[in-house]
Amino acid sequence: MGAVVGQALLEAAVLVAAVTALALPFSNYVVKAMEGCPMTARRVLGPLERGCERLVGADDEAPMGWKRYLLCALALTAVGCAGLFGILLLQGVLPANPEELPGLPADTAFNVAASFATNTDWQAVAGESHLSYFSQAVGLTVENFLSPAVGIAAAFALMRGLWSRGGEAVGNFFVDVTRALIYVLVPLALVGCIAGMAEGIPQTLEPYETVQLIEPVAVDGEGNVVAADDPSAVRDVTEAVVPLGPQASQVSIKQIGTNGGGFNGANSASSLENPTPFTNLLQCGAIMLLPLTLIFCFGRMVADRRQGRALMAAVLALLGVGVTALIAAEFAATPQLSDGGAVYTGNVGQSAGNMEGKEVRIGTGATALWTALTTAAANGSSNGSLAGLTPLGLVVPLVFMGVGEVVGGGVGTGLASLLGFTILTVFIASLMVGRAPEYLGKKIGPAEMRLAVVMAVAPSLLMLAGAAVLVLVPAAAQTVGGGGPEGFANAFYAAVSTGANNGSALGGFNADTPWANGVLGAEMILGRVVALGCTMALAGRFAACEPAAQATGSLSTASPLFVVLLMVIVVLVGALTLVPALALGPVALAVG
Image 1 (spheres, one colour):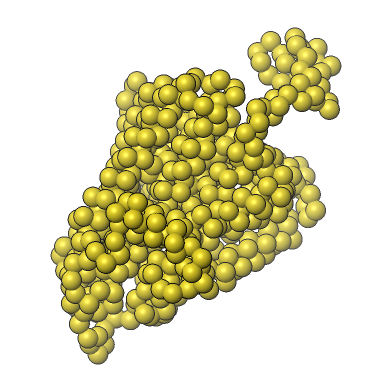
Image 2: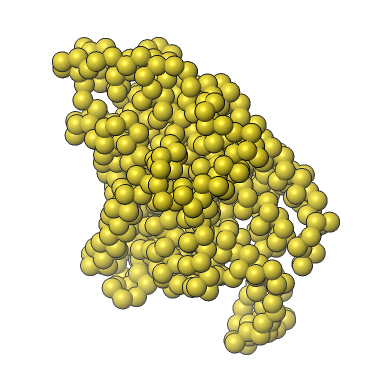
């Protein structure tokens, strides 16, 4: 088994190294695009950029203070949420609905609208059976572009604040969103869409197709699928419905924008969304591209690439530990599955380890890698059932999400959260060595520390509050899918996932209930508002602060020692938050 684990780890290392190598030069392009610098793409797309800016009344020569910037970000998020809510409610009377699907109930529509407007993309219902082509393409896909664009804009506002030489301006929100869309998100999504179509992902407005099964099956009296010659069979099934629709366009941006979600309920385990090994590899890389790119952008924006490399080192180290632990746990399986070594669980060249909930065509290693990347990057898409993970394997995605988008995180919001932890680390380390805390020449005072602490702990508080409501309120008990450690794990994972801007879920959780829709929808909105508020307030505080010359003996924030300290602070905050809850859920399942 050691050989197959080593092969899976090597494949993971090569993929992450390739994405990191691509992110370095791409960060130069993104910075030039967002800062309005001359470049080839601007010569081609400049008229479109200027036309869009005139349409929304944006002016690069009229930068905003942080309060106005924040209000604009919240207003765009609210308008997007309200528009999507209306589309979902009126879906039954809107065009492009060949399956004649009715509008969603109000609580479900609220949950889905809040989810996609906040870049969480938690889906309480399966797309192919509940959402029309219009809702998918005009509703969800548009938000899949807008929500990461807001995150990119907020991240650049914070970077400008850190590099500002005094003043209150942090940029123009609408200019930033326009540039993020035109120069970054749309081109990347177009390339991903074309590649997906070439590999067989549908992109059409044709209605669903009914096809004949090559090997007929049957259904028993309880609705379970059984073999055609099974004595318990009561009805033969010889046909299947294949959902079509504009899938490639949504799949592309859901990965690039760390959105997640899925056109189909099976998400990226579906052969329609993820048909080949190449699409699996391409989508894995797309999940991490922008989160890693923005870390390198930070080094360029503050004119000190060592700062970006230091943050990248911390992120890659934490990611490497998580990926290794998850792959090892899934290949080791469980004592019950392997029967103490008496049961053969596979080797190199075939499916191996814990194959529960995994596609045979994808395998254990690729599923474990995807799971680690999608929870680290706050993406939320999945190419296997997360409920099928081993109990110890389930700990890794919970920790990645629970520490608050630090290990890559969502587009823009991940970098902001990482910088919040960085400021917290600078403050603690400076006090330890008897120095006044400062970062990039900007002094860190009480106000900056309060904001950094809120950025670090607010997601955890929201997660625990959401889990507490789902577990303790009797009316919400039907959502958790059982009692004991398993039911708690279902509720806790759902609350962590929605609070961490992720959107993945365990199969046992009953998502589409009024309580789940209300509690988790409110959690997603609060998480987004708090994150944006702290990010912009911090940007404003740093922008107004005049930089001071670095004193002799000042703490170096680009040294290996600081990288280690940053990782320790991240782990400590995560441990203090998560260990008690993990002990009641996944750990209890493992020892039980």
